Image 1 (cartoon, rainbow, N blue to C red):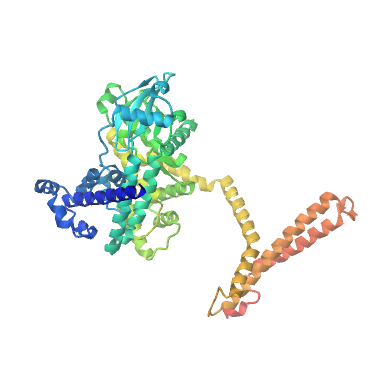
Image 2: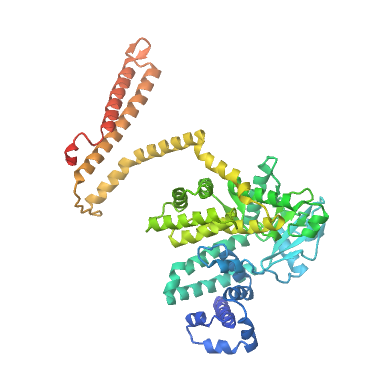
Length: 573
């Protein structure tokens, strides 16, 4: 039986592989198919495609055809395209814009199948679980569909139900994608720099997380908590709450939100809602997510935004979210402020901080490109204060000079483009930079906070203490390796003696610091315990320990101040 299943799986993979080749040929990617076709069936595949279909496909641009290939190959490739659209560092900008248009609408699964998934996951009948289950879904996609349901307590819920068998389909497609990536990597040397197998691996991790609705429910809850805990008067964002008792890996229950789609201008005008006010609120809410929460909605297109009757904005669909470290939030602030001040050196420093100080081969060329970017930004009148335009232009410089910035930089840039597009439709004259400026200043001001500075100093001392504690052990291990012949060092360097002397001096200072610390601790114990002999009420031994510690400390400070000038003055002559 196991043998038949194995043969069946292999047949499925081969059939799917051939289907992919056929679609690629249909849209004119014959050169790519020639690389992929190991068994020379290329001409046979051409004959399987009607001439009219091929001619129809040629009327599209190269990037449009890539989008159509993804759409025709189904949910796995649609999702792959959508995730790839967040990586403008890897693919051309025109292709990212085209992949953002990928359609994910498919016919819904029948009501009975949807109910079976719910009953299997929640281990009870739909009738016992809910007061009402809407038979027709109000939203349907390739991976899931959403039904309105009413709980026994009268609460309305949006119930997201995963399509049965979709996980198996995606897993099978991922196997084929790995095969294609391996062939491309072997046969096209220039494509190695894109790491095709690594891309598929990252996609696999992302889509398997998305298939687990528990992950999405955590995203929703985290976003909901951030908004709920924000008690400021300018908090106009809303998120649905999660009903955990009705949520599993394949079923997600969220509070049903009623409102107007943010791009439905006729309805907004009918309800007398000020679109300019909504535009400002949306923009401010987004920058709060970035700079205050460090956790933001990474796909804020119009379909995922509702305007409620009270003018608040509800975010929907939390499958794609972005996280930013506090350190990177601060760097974002420094970067934008440096751009407005035309400070080239600070812009470069901020970009290097983002990339963990990646070595730049030609720093003068980077400085020239940044200077050109700043000068163009200063004199232009179109797109001057559009932060997304700034990031996208910087993206080209970052890639050209090999700076390895974190992925959330590009995710932020892409989502900023989306949110700016929505906000500008609501108010063509909105100035996003002026709205963002207080957040940028606040982010930068955090680095000057004396309390945070004190915490950093304490942490640094703690790390130094750990280093001092581990140093003897590391030194002993290094010596053992040298004695066993595992480490061989052959150095010929003029002036090596001063370096050896410096190492000896530092080692001596570390040991002295150890002794001083031990003497102070010992003195404290003797004095507190009142160990005899006593001088008045104070332990004499404790006092002696303190005096010795002070003498050693004075000697160490003198040694530090003196530096290397004491014995190596003649090296400078």
